[in-house]
Length: 284
Length: 273
Image (cartoon, rainbow over the protein chains, first blue to last red):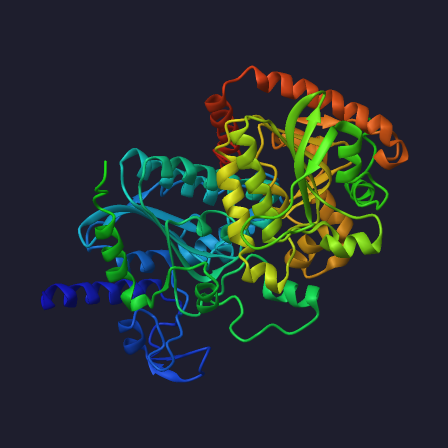
């Protein structure tokens, strides 16, 4: 057993090394929250969480998948689905190409099938490095295709949100992805299949106001910013400073919108528990 | 129809404080309106007005965002920016419509959902998401009319409809042009430019397949001769309702979902240069 975990950790480290944005050779990482330096290997062992204060660093979609999926089970869905420019928005293609080069992603979401603790499932992960994880038409379409794939194959669905909201450059067509993904989930629910939504930093705007808020179970990473309107807009509107911890995962839990705040290091075991609890329905 | 107006000009007309609001539409198009208040959870939000009324003698559920015409009215309804309680009231009324097999007619005129501390604490995002989810399943006809501004998820939360109609000078967008230019360029003064780029006018959205019909307005805007706008809208509502009446409930839900399912699918391939 130890051997398996060791292997897994080794794999995670390897993935992280590839995906991490830090310059190669750098041995220390500075936490933006507590400002303390930590050994890079130590941070990696904690799945990119500050060992000093528990700050969860933003992580890429593939790395996220490697932290929850059983080794060797990952199979990407619609990997080649093309990014679009439906409104022919000036300068948008160039910016997309730049983001593609920087991240190695086609778009802001990766969807895949895989197994978690032996439970086969469909997992989608938004990547905040690509246009702040915003929902473009392609992102909405890929998520919808993943929901439909899970429905067709009777698999549970897990979506990790990390998004600034709808993609501005695709205007109203981005907005319509909210209706599309929510409607797809309504159809998925008719099949009595489990949908777990995991809210990570940040989950805001049109993503909060659509699929991210519709999980049977809603989990959140510690400290994640979660809300519909951005804190700056709210502050401008009400003209007063916002309370400490406002719109953070713990605040959402307190206000009844999140089932549990789950640290990254415990996310995989929590998902395994949930998948096991929903494996058999019981009453017919 | 006047096709010569720029997008920015239409935004100005759409925001004219004298433009007919939900109460005007209810008075003009319906009889026997009974207002239903409260979300049955914890609150009542005046930012959304809803109830039951007769449309040419037939019971319908009417729901709309509410903008006031005076400062006092506007303070009560947060200038037409609904709170979660409003969206949840809307959802309650839609379920009621489903139970009594009444068509749902919604009127949208909002600069967006209210961005407030309590609105967030009460789950603004969840309230909107749940409306999108449930509206996609309704088995009665749903027609939405964008009458003024339709901005962001706060507008869409009442507009997952079998037919989305727009008044000629109404605008419908991902957010306000000011917000858009601030986010993209950190410069709210590029408002007019943003208006053009956003494809937010009725003719643009009809071409994109986001809306289904455009309701002509009198020259200069609906506020100059409201009776003409009401007559045009009445005719369109009767026409679309008659069409939807021919379909069965399950088919209405399926067609409504498929309409949104197609939007933005098969994004155009990147041009090779």
